[in-house]
Image (cartoon, protein in one colour):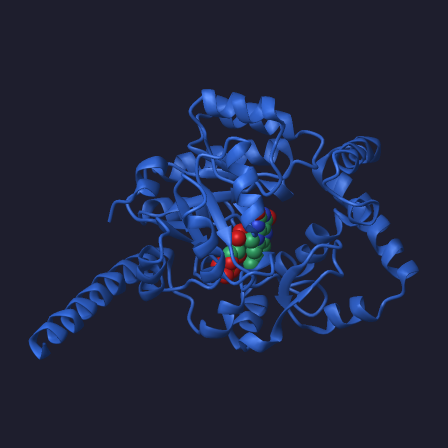
Length: 356
Ligand SMILES: Cc1cc2nc3c(=O)[nH]c(=O)nc-3n(C[C@H](O)[C@H](O)[C@H](O)COP(=O)(O)O)c2cc1C
Protein backbone atom coordinates (compact mmCIF):
# COMPACT_ATOMS: atom_id res chain seq x y z
CA UNK A 1 0.00 0.00 0.00
CA UNK A 2 1.62 3.24 -1.13
CA UNK A 3 0.65 6.72 0.05
CA UNK A 4 2.54 10.06 0.01
CA UNK A 5 3.77 9.08 3.49
CA UNK A 6 5.31 5.77 2.45
CA UNK A 7 6.99 7.57 -0.45
CA UNK A 8 8.42 10.24 1.85
CA UNK A 9 9.63 7.73 4.45
CA UNK A 10 10.61 4.93 2.08
CA UNK A 11 8.63 2.19 3.85
CA UNK A 12 6.30 -0.49 2.46
CA UNK A 13 3.23 0.22 4.58
CA UNK A 14 1.75 3.44 5.99
CA UNK A 15 2.29 2.27 9.56
CA UNK A 16 4.57 4.18 11.92
CA UNK A 17 5.89 2.92 15.24
CA UNK A 18 6.23 6.09 17.26
CA UNK A 19 8.98 6.88 19.72
CA UNK A 20 8.34 5.85 23.31
CA UNK A 21 10.88 6.57 26.02
CA UNK A 22 12.48 3.32 27.30
CA UNK A 23 10.32 1.29 24.89
CA UNK A 24 11.21 2.12 21.28
CA UNK A 25 14.67 0.54 21.40
CA UNK A 26 16.82 -0.68 18.47
CA UNK A 27 15.20 -4.14 18.51
CA UNK A 28 11.67 -2.75 18.20
CA UNK A 29 12.67 -0.22 15.53
CA UNK A 30 14.53 -2.81 13.42
CA UNK A 31 11.64 -5.30 13.72
CA UNK A 32 9.23 -2.59 12.54
CA UNK A 33 11.40 -1.74 9.53
CA UNK A 34 11.84 -5.42 8.62
CA UNK A 35 8.07 -5.89 8.74
CA UNK A 36 7.51 -2.97 6.33
CA UNK A 37 6.58 -0.24 8.83
CA UNK A 38 8.63 2.80 9.87
CA UNK A 39 10.06 2.94 13.40
CA UNK A 40 11.39 5.83 15.48
CA UNK A 41 14.16 5.27 18.04
CA UNK A 42 13.31 6.87 21.43
CA UNK A 43 16.32 9.18 21.63
CA UNK A 44 14.70 11.49 24.17
CA UNK A 45 15.85 9.37 27.12
CA UNK A 46 19.30 8.52 25.75
CA UNK A 47 22.77 10.02 25.90
CA UNK A 48 24.39 11.07 22.64
CA UNK A 49 26.54 7.93 22.71
CA UNK A 50 23.51 5.72 23.33
CA UNK A 51 21.71 7.27 20.38
CA UNK A 52 24.68 6.55 18.13
CA UNK A 53 24.97 2.98 19.46
CA UNK A 54 21.22 2.59 18.87
CA UNK A 55 21.51 3.81 15.28
CA UNK A 56 24.34 1.36 14.61
CA UNK A 57 22.43 -1.50 16.25
CA UNK A 58 19.37 -0.81 14.09
CA UNK A 59 21.51 -0.63 10.96
CA UNK A 60 23.09 -3.98 11.76
CA UNK A 61 19.62 -5.59 11.96
CA UNK A 62 17.82 -4.00 9.04
CA UNK A 63 18.37 -2.20 5.74
CA UNK A 64 14.99 -0.49 6.16
CA UNK A 65 14.90 3.27 6.75
CA UNK A 66 14.04 4.50 10.26
CA UNK A 67 13.87 7.67 12.33
CA UNK A 68 15.17 9.19 15.57
CA UNK A 69 13.08 11.08 18.13
CA UNK A 70 14.61 13.66 20.45
CA UNK A 71 13.71 16.47 22.85
CA UNK A 72 14.94 20.01 22.42
CA UNK A 73 15.50 20.47 26.15
CA UNK A 74 18.57 18.26 26.35
CA UNK A 75 21.73 20.38 26.17
CA UNK A 76 23.16 18.26 23.33
CA UNK A 77 20.13 18.57 21.03
CA UNK A 78 22.20 20.27 18.30
CA UNK A 79 24.68 17.36 18.45
CA UNK A 80 21.81 14.90 17.90
CA UNK A 81 20.89 16.83 14.76
CA UNK A 82 24.48 16.51 13.48
CA UNK A 83 24.52 12.81 14.38
CA UNK A 84 21.32 12.15 12.41
CA UNK A 85 22.76 13.93 9.40
CA UNK A 86 26.08 12.09 9.64
CA UNK A 87 24.27 8.72 9.78
CA UNK A 88 21.87 9.67 6.97
CA UNK A 89 18.82 9.03 9.13
CA UNK A 90 15.65 9.12 7.06
CA UNK A 91 13.50 11.13 9.49
CA UNK A 92 13.51 12.87 12.85
CA UNK A 93 10.55 13.43 15.15
CA UNK A 94 10.13 15.86 18.02
CA UNK A 95 7.33 17.62 19.84
CA UNK A 96 9.08 20.98 20.25
CA UNK A 97 10.72 22.28 17.12
CA UNK A 98 14.53 22.49 17.07
CA UNK A 99 16.06 25.87 16.16
CA UNK A 100 15.32 27.22 12.66
CA UNK A 101 19.00 26.64 11.84
CA UNK A 102 18.75 22.95 12.84
CA UNK A 103 15.56 22.40 10.85
CA UNK A 104 17.21 24.02 7.84
CA UNK A 105 20.31 21.84 8.31
CA UNK A 106 18.23 18.65 8.55
CA UNK A 107 16.10 19.49 5.54
CA UNK A 108 19.00 20.41 3.31
CA UNK A 109 20.65 17.10 4.26
CA UNK A 110 17.45 15.31 3.12
CA UNK A 111 16.30 14.29 6.62
CA UNK A 112 12.47 14.31 6.83
CA UNK A 113 11.27 16.49 9.71
CA UNK A 114 8.13 14.91 11.19
CA UNK A 115 7.00 16.47 14.48
CA UNK A 116 4.09 15.23 16.59
CA UNK A 117 1.37 17.78 17.29
CA UNK A 118 -1.76 17.57 19.40
CA UNK A 119 -3.63 20.71 18.31
CA UNK A 120 -4.54 22.37 15.01
CA UNK A 121 -2.61 25.58 15.74
CA UNK A 122 0.52 23.54 16.53
CA UNK A 123 0.13 21.70 13.21
CA UNK A 124 0.04 24.98 11.29
CA UNK A 125 3.01 26.34 13.26
CA UNK A 126 5.03 23.14 12.78
CA UNK A 127 4.57 23.33 9.00
CA UNK A 128 5.56 27.01 9.05
CA UNK A 129 8.72 25.95 10.90
CA UNK A 130 9.56 23.47 8.14
CA UNK A 131 7.85 20.15 8.94
CA UNK A 132 7.76 17.82 5.92
CA UNK A 133 5.06 15.60 7.45
CA UNK A 134 3.11 15.48 10.71
CA UNK A 135 2.02 12.96 13.28
CA UNK A 136 -1.23 14.38 14.65
CA UNK A 137 -2.04 12.84 18.01
CA UNK A 138 -5.58 12.96 19.35
CA UNK A 139 -6.40 13.09 23.06
CA UNK A 140 -6.92 9.34 23.37
CA UNK A 141 -3.22 8.80 22.59
CA UNK A 142 -0.58 7.85 25.16
CA UNK A 143 2.03 10.07 26.82
CA UNK A 144 1.84 13.86 26.34
CA UNK A 145 -1.45 14.48 24.64
CA UNK A 146 -3.93 17.16 23.62
CA UNK A 147 -7.59 17.57 24.42
CA UNK A 148 -9.10 17.07 20.95
CA UNK A 149 -10.07 13.53 19.87
CA UNK A 150 -8.20 11.98 16.94
CA UNK A 151 -11.00 12.10 14.35
CA UNK A 152 -11.85 15.71 15.18
CA UNK A 153 -8.18 16.77 15.06
CA UNK A 154 -7.77 14.97 11.74
CA UNK A 155 -10.83 16.80 10.40
CA UNK A 156 -9.27 20.12 11.47
CA UNK A 157 -5.79 19.48 10.15
CA UNK A 158 -6.36 17.66 6.87
CA UNK A 159 -7.62 20.70 4.97
CA UNK A 160 -5.33 23.13 6.77
CA UNK A 161 -1.86 21.86 5.92
CA UNK A 162 -0.23 20.69 2.72
CA UNK A 163 2.06 17.95 4.12
CA UNK A 164 1.34 14.20 4.58
CA UNK A 165 -0.31 13.33 7.89
CA UNK A 166 -0.09 10.20 10.02
CA UNK A 167 -3.04 9.94 12.42
CA UNK A 168 -2.18 8.81 15.96
CA UNK A 169 -4.13 8.12 19.11
CA UNK A 170 -6.28 5.02 19.40
CA UNK A 171 -5.07 2.87 16.47
CA UNK A 172 -4.36 -0.85 16.67
CA UNK A 173 -5.75 -2.63 13.59
CA UNK A 174 -6.52 -2.70 9.89
CA UNK A 175 -10.01 -1.24 10.09
CA UNK A 176 -8.52 1.73 11.96
CA UNK A 177 -5.98 2.17 9.17
CA UNK A 178 -8.72 2.18 6.52
CA UNK A 179 -10.79 4.63 8.60
CA UNK A 180 -7.80 6.99 8.98
CA UNK A 181 -7.07 6.89 5.25
CA UNK A 182 -10.75 7.47 4.45
CA UNK A 183 -10.75 10.49 6.76
CA UNK A 184 -7.82 12.14 5.02
CA UNK A 185 -4.67 10.82 6.72
CA UNK A 186 -1.91 9.18 4.69
CA UNK A 187 -1.08 6.61 7.35
CA UNK A 188 -1.34 5.76 11.04
CA UNK A 189 1.16 6.06 13.87
CA UNK A 190 0.90 3.84 16.94
CA UNK A 191 2.65 3.79 20.30
CA UNK A 192 0.73 1.61 22.74
CA UNK A 193 0.05 -1.14 20.17
CA UNK A 194 3.81 -1.51 19.55
CA UNK A 195 4.52 -1.42 23.30
CA UNK A 196 2.39 -4.55 23.54
CA UNK A 197 4.43 -6.77 21.20
CA UNK A 198 6.95 -9.57 21.67
CA UNK A 199 9.89 -7.35 20.69
CA UNK A 200 8.98 -4.52 23.05
CA UNK A 201 11.52 -4.51 25.93
CA UNK A 202 8.92 -3.65 28.60
CA UNK A 203 9.03 -6.24 31.42
CA UNK A 204 6.22 -8.83 31.46
CA UNK A 205 4.83 -7.65 34.82
CA UNK A 206 4.31 -4.18 33.33
CA UNK A 207 2.87 -5.47 30.04
CA UNK A 208 0.38 -7.53 32.08
CA UNK A 209 -0.96 -4.35 33.70
CA UNK A 210 -1.49 -2.74 30.28
CA UNK A 211 -3.30 -5.86 29.04
CA UNK A 212 -5.78 -5.93 31.92
CA UNK A 213 -6.57 -2.20 32.22
CA UNK A 214 -9.92 -1.04 30.78
CA UNK A 215 -10.04 2.21 28.74
CA UNK A 216 -11.79 4.19 31.49
CA UNK A 217 -8.79 3.64 33.81
CA UNK A 218 -6.40 5.28 31.33
CA UNK A 219 -6.56 8.90 32.34
CA UNK A 220 -4.99 12.31 31.72
CA UNK A 221 -2.98 14.02 34.45
CA UNK A 222 -0.72 17.08 34.63
CA UNK A 223 1.00 15.91 37.83
CA UNK A 224 4.21 14.73 36.12
CA UNK A 225 5.45 17.87 34.42
CA UNK A 226 2.58 20.30 34.33
CA UNK A 227 1.52 19.19 30.84
CA UNK A 228 -1.36 16.79 30.18
CA UNK A 229 -0.20 13.19 29.85
CA UNK A 230 -2.29 10.07 29.38
CA UNK A 231 -1.38 7.11 31.57
CA UNK A 232 -2.75 4.17 33.49
CA UNK A 233 -4.33 5.20 36.81
CA UNK A 234 -2.20 3.23 39.31
CA UNK A 235 -1.23 3.67 42.94
CA UNK A 236 1.86 5.74 42.03
CA UNK A 237 -0.27 8.30 40.17
CA UNK A 238 -2.68 8.37 43.13
CA UNK A 239 0.28 9.24 45.39
CA UNK A 240 1.39 12.01 43.00
CA UNK A 241 -2.12 13.47 42.99
CA UNK A 242 -2.15 13.47 46.80
CA UNK A 243 1.37 14.91 47.17
CA UNK A 244 1.87 18.45 48.49
CA UNK A 245 3.53 21.15 46.36
CA UNK A 246 6.68 20.76 48.48
CA UNK A 247 6.62 17.00 47.96
CA UNK A 248 6.33 17.52 44.20
CA UNK A 249 9.20 20.02 44.21
CA UNK A 250 11.50 17.65 46.10
CA UNK A 251 10.60 14.85 43.69
CA UNK A 252 11.24 17.14 40.70
CA UNK A 253 14.70 18.12 42.01
CA UNK A 254 15.61 14.50 42.71
CA UNK A 255 14.48 13.44 39.24
CA UNK A 256 16.25 16.42 37.65
CA UNK A 257 19.53 15.32 39.24
CA UNK A 258 19.00 11.70 38.19
CA UNK A 259 18.19 12.84 34.65
CA UNK A 260 21.39 14.89 34.33
CA UNK A 261 23.34 11.88 35.56
CA UNK A 262 21.62 9.63 33.07
CA UNK A 263 22.13 11.91 30.07
CA UNK A 264 25.73 12.67 31.04
CA UNK A 265 25.12 16.43 31.17
CA UNK A 266 25.74 18.74 34.11
CA UNK A 267 23.01 20.34 36.17
CA UNK A 268 24.30 23.68 34.92
CA UNK A 269 23.80 22.60 31.29
CA UNK A 270 20.27 21.45 32.08
CA UNK A 271 19.45 24.71 33.84
CA UNK A 272 20.80 26.70 30.88
CA UNK A 273 18.66 24.83 28.35
CA UNK A 274 15.64 25.00 30.68
CA UNK A 275 16.17 28.76 30.97
CA UNK A 276 16.39 29.09 27.18
CA UNK A 277 13.08 27.25 26.80
CA UNK A 278 11.44 29.36 29.47
CA UNK A 279 12.64 32.55 27.79
CA UNK A 280 11.42 31.19 24.45
CA UNK A 281 7.99 31.05 26.11
CA UNK A 282 7.71 27.32 25.54
CA UNK A 283 7.47 26.21 29.17
CA UNK A 284 6.51 27.90 32.42
CA UNK A 285 9.00 27.89 35.32
CA UNK A 286 7.07 25.07 37.02
CA UNK A 287 7.03 22.98 33.86
CA UNK A 288 10.72 23.64 33.30
CA UNK A 289 11.51 22.44 36.82
CA UNK A 290 9.44 19.32 36.29
CA UNK A 291 10.64 18.55 32.76
CA UNK A 292 12.90 15.72 33.87
CA UNK A 293 10.18 14.12 35.98
CA UNK A 294 8.45 12.08 33.31
CA UNK A 295 11.46 10.13 32.01
CA UNK A 296 12.60 9.14 35.50
CA UNK A 297 9.14 8.16 36.79
CA UNK A 298 8.47 6.12 33.66
CA UNK A 299 11.78 4.25 33.97
CA UNK A 300 10.75 2.47 37.17
CA UNK A 301 7.80 0.74 35.48
CA UNK A 302 9.18 0.37 31.98
CA UNK A 303 12.74 -0.73 32.72
CA UNK A 304 12.78 -2.00 36.28
CA UNK A 305 9.45 -3.84 35.99
CA UNK A 306 7.72 -2.27 39.01
CA UNK A 307 4.39 -1.17 37.53
CA UNK A 308 3.02 0.16 40.82
CA UNK A 309 6.17 2.21 41.59
CA UNK A 310 6.25 4.27 38.43
CA UNK A 311 4.20 5.88 35.70
CA UNK A 312 2.72 3.88 32.81
CA UNK A 313 2.06 6.19 29.86
CA UNK A 314 -0.62 4.61 27.72
CA UNK A 315 -3.16 5.32 25.04
CA UNK A 316 -6.76 4.41 25.86
CA UNK A 317 -6.45 1.81 23.13
CA UNK A 318 -4.64 -0.45 25.63
CA UNK A 319 -8.15 -1.18 26.91
CA UNK A 320 -8.90 -2.90 23.58
CA UNK A 321 -5.66 -4.86 23.34
CA UNK A 322 -5.35 -8.35 24.80
CA UNK A 323 -2.48 -9.99 22.95
CA UNK A 324 1.30 -9.69 22.48
CA UNK A 325 1.98 -10.51 18.81
CA UNK A 326 5.39 -10.29 17.16
CA UNK A 327 5.87 -7.04 15.23
CA UNK A 328 5.82 -9.00 11.96
CA UNK A 329 2.48 -10.66 12.87
CA UNK A 330 1.07 -7.31 13.99
CA UNK A 331 1.94 -5.42 10.80
CA UNK A 332 1.01 -8.21 8.39
CA UNK A 333 -2.24 -8.72 10.34
CA UNK A 334 -3.08 -5.00 10.07
CA UNK A 335 -2.46 -5.02 6.32
CA UNK A 336 -4.53 -8.20 5.82
CA UNK A 337 -7.36 -6.72 7.87
CA UNK A 338 -7.15 -3.45 5.90
CA UNK A 339 -7.60 -5.46 2.67
CA UNK A 340 -10.55 -7.44 4.01
CA UNK A 341 -12.15 -4.26 5.39
CA UNK A 342 -11.90 -2.61 1.97
CA UNK A 343 -13.37 -5.69 0.33
CA UNK A 344 -16.25 -5.80 2.81
CA UNK A 345 -16.94 -2.11 2.23
CA UNK A 346 -16.92 -2.68 -1.51
CA UNK A 347 -19.43 -5.50 -1.07
CA UNK A 348 -21.73 -3.14 0.83
CA UNK A 349 -21.39 -0.68 -2.01
CA UNK A 350 -22.21 -3.29 -4.64
CA UNK A 351 -25.04 -4.60 -2.47
CA UNK A 352 -26.45 -1.09 -2.26
CA UNK A 353 -26.28 -0.82 -6.05
CA UNK A 354 -28.23 -4.07 -6.49
CA UNK A 355 -30.87 -2.83 -4.11
CA UNK A 356 -31.15 0.40 -6.13
C1 LIG B 1 5.06 4.47 27.02
C2 LIG B 1 5.00 5.66 26.12
C3 LIG B 1 6.12 6.48 26.02
C4 LIG B 1 6.10 7.58 25.15
N1 LIG B 1 7.25 8.33 25.01
C5 LIG B 1 7.31 9.29 24.04
C6 LIG B 1 8.53 9.95 23.77
O1 LIG B 1 9.57 9.69 24.38
N2 LIG B 1 8.54 10.91 22.79
C7 LIG B 1 7.40 11.21 22.07
O2 LIG B 1 7.46 12.07 21.18
N3 LIG B 1 6.22 10.59 22.32
C8 LIG B 1 6.15 9.63 23.27
N4 LIG B 1 4.98 8.95 23.48
C9 LIG B 1 3.79 9.19 22.60
C10 LIG B 1 3.83 8.18 21.43
O3 LIG B 1 4.97 8.37 20.65
C11 LIG B 1 2.59 8.24 20.51
O4 LIG B 1 2.46 9.54 19.95
C12 LIG B 1 1.30 7.80 21.20
O5 LIG B 1 1.54 6.66 21.97
C13 LIG B 1 0.21 7.53 20.16
O6 LIG B 1 -0.99 7.10 20.75
P1 LIG B 1 -1.39 5.54 20.99
O7 LIG B 1 -0.67 5.14 22.20
O8 LIG B 1 -2.88 5.57 21.14
O9 LIG B 1 -0.96 4.78 19.78
C14 LIG B 1 4.94 7.87 24.39
C15 LIG B 1 3.80 7.05 24.52
C16 LIG B 1 3.82 5.95 25.36
C17 LIG B 1 2.59 5.07 25.44
